[in-house]
Length: 112
Image (cartoon, rainbow, N blue to C red; front, side, top):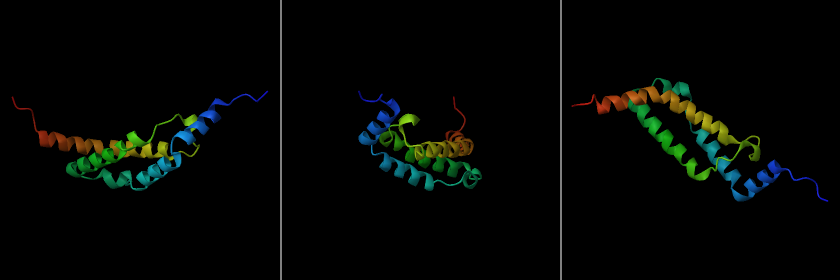
């Protein structure tokens, strides 16, 4: 009789066969390497913050079509997708106040 199946190991093997995890990991690393530090964007004005946040979100959205966002249990222990997601969220939060001010300035007060 064969040993008991390990569902996590089986899931990891299946994930590695079905998805190009190495390629996706490389894309996450490149994305993260291209991100500025929060301190670099913290003092940007409203228009620049809006532009930077728009580009940041545009680049991140590409992962929605590439990365299947598999459970941690079936991904390699050093999966860079978790770190790049945290960096994305951190930068988006840092840019949000000034970017939102820009939108408010452009749209102006409601007229009625």
